[in-house]
Image 1 (cartoon, rainbow, N blue to C red):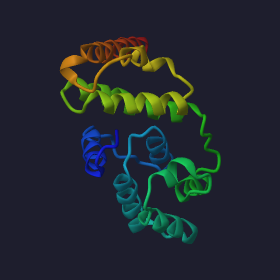
Image 2: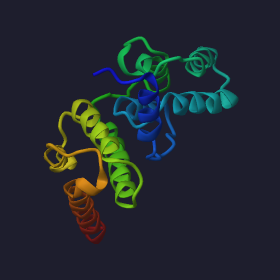
Image 3: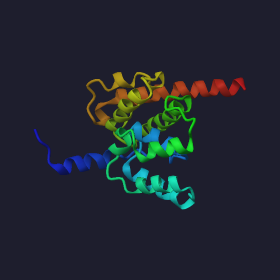
Length: 185
């Protein structure tokens, strides 16, 4: 069955209801794009803001290129994309598999779960993040059992209570871990 074009637009509009943190750095923006947390408009807005404070010619060119992107896939899939090149210029020692990358992805994930429990977003929003995070962060344990919670779940909150239950369990686990770490210091 072929769906009308407007349904794709409507789904894209609805699935961006989660509000993700604004990245401070180019590598945070790259990670957010790679896990599906940021939209094309997030990239363009971030680049436009950075342009105002930049005085390095190579960076100005790349930031300008980012403000003129037409497709987020250019950031996700092209190895020569302007955002990746900007990360290499600004952070020559940055490692894409580094601990700070996974930590930033985890922060986005936990914030998304909190928002979901507060009634923001739909199951598809969380499912999309799960898929991208699994690939980008090599199936991290901090995703909990969320993948299993989606097994056969419809994209309807009222028919998918197991997603909310798993989100709550993950947040409780990390709340307890954070509290224990704070107590140890």
